[in-house]
Length: 196
Image 1 (spheres, one colour):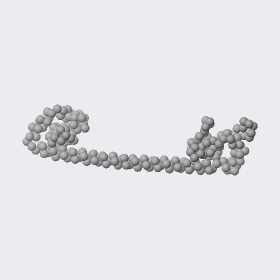
Image 2 (cartoon, rainbow, N blue to C red):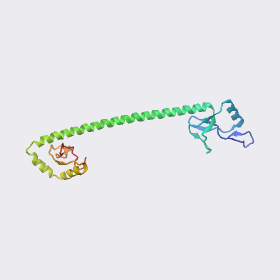
Image 3 (cartoon, rainbow, N blue to C red):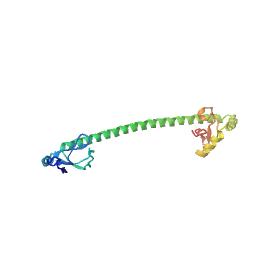
């Protein structure tokens, strides 16, 4: 698009001639139409489909196709290649961070599973040792009357579908203060009154 000069000079290119400044395209102002046409015919200005952002100070619309020098096209391609390289490097670093985080989570999960297995083995051993004594029945009876035990058994039944009875074990606090709740299949992990 060309427009006449206000002082009556030659026509100038008003829109469509751009240069790349390293990050975005900018409109070239004040280029005489004869100069622009000479550049086009000499191959110094070629049409280009703009791929980067287009900066306009005065609010003119940005064109999807513009005229520019081939070196600006090469500069845009270099800029886009660098942006892509940075994006890929960022994504690779993010993937590495995610793999490391997942590995740490897996180690924690394995540690938790091992801890649960050790606690269950400990409870089973304690339950088996306690069941063999003649005082076990009396202790189960007394333990069953302790405050909150019936609520814990009801909680297990209602929330987890576990049929539980009162067992007896060492007074280790991780086993409900010495009252592990035992299901039909043997010692269960003590969930306590609050399912923890």
